[in-house]
Image 1: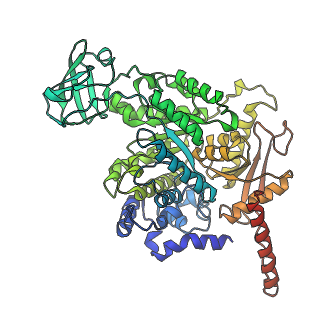
Image 2: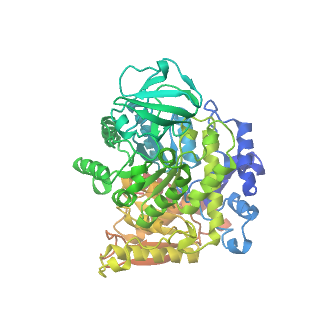
Image 3: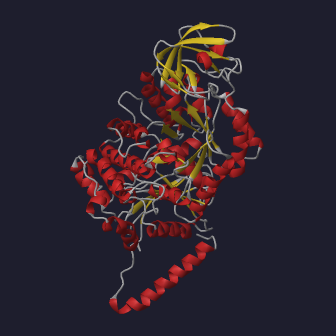
Length: 621
């Protein structure tokens, strides 16, 4: 079964020749992807071919890299990594563990394009509520639900709220502005650009501005210095010119607008998200923890608690948010490093520092974190990325981000599939290079503090029911799995234990089996977690056997391979609440078939497969 699966996966790559599935050294990976896709085309009008072969070979951990794929060992052989370090990995390379968030828009909202992105490595679907309608976003949710129902993968849905924005008004025609030109922004209605006088949609704009402030248009595409302020007007001198059109986004560097973090439109979108059953909210322009608790209280009043809850992620993108970073990270379920607006409100040279602080802050708390914005911005219009963009992806992976995000690249760009292929390839290659490092400093940087306990030892009660005990088992299970070079298996009803295992970033995937589809989808965001739906039996050995069989059939493990199985967590399954267990098991080998018994064994195998299929259809597997 495993060999047949691998043959099906690799057949498209073999048909296109060895270069299609054998990436060369790292500096040639992206160029090879571009040449391959340039020959095949990358537009919506294509007949929606299979995902690019390398995307299959290096695909997301959610779908798993087949252990019999020869593309991954080829990559290891050609990569500039010490052979001594990786000699134990060449026959069993770990799958990619960094997840990818893709924004869905006009380029990718049709079924064929959406499914192609999902097959090629998308783990989380981002709905950008700044664009589109509820009707168009519902169509995307329906596609994600259909994809999951087909058993092709596990997609989570993240709704990104529009948030409060200060924007200029409509102008009769775009203004061509040069350095030194005078522009007036006014809170009075009716200013339409004539005489370089433009209205603003924010009545307190004149109170927020100060003489000498730098006013940025669309994140810094244009810049103006505030020179004079009246009761209704802010008079500016153009520093960096350009074309100023209608409804442009305005920021005052170093300041956040005094607007409610959740607008009336956002509340309508949030209610729509509840109806659609989204898995995460990414809340824009969070200034402090109060707005997080406000949203969580609303969701609790709607009955969305426990495993039915919707995760709340804070987008850190304002001067106020970094000033209150610690309290925000304590309150949220995760965070997004939204570098676009963050770089507009803060000096750009501070963005890398705050990116590291946000990522490490989430890592220390055991909460997922996404690095977003401009990761492959040039690929919106160009078939290949800049070398700086490639390094940007690698830095986010090395820092230990759970996920990296594509925005306009997959929403409206010319090369959505090539962008995703580039991101997954660079992330995969970076993870392989990190195998030479061990210990808590393997992620982050030498100046960053080590990532260790979420619950420090001095805060533990010493009771067998202490939540900290589960974390101890997660730590030691990860150490055991890394030493044995094997994946981890955990059974969970709430998702707590796989999240703890993800915190310690094991080398191999964490296969989490759960009976709850909501938990399964939430885990799609977590680093290295492959969440699989399976009904649990009353008998643990029956469930263990089913799990190993499912992993073998899907090509995640092979016969004779060791796996580390963890039984711990807040809710006991097949164990006493005071008992926590780590065990190592060997995946059963496939039975050898004698030639004289081949026919009868084949009939028996067919019967077993038929029974398994019937059980799966009945919802037992």
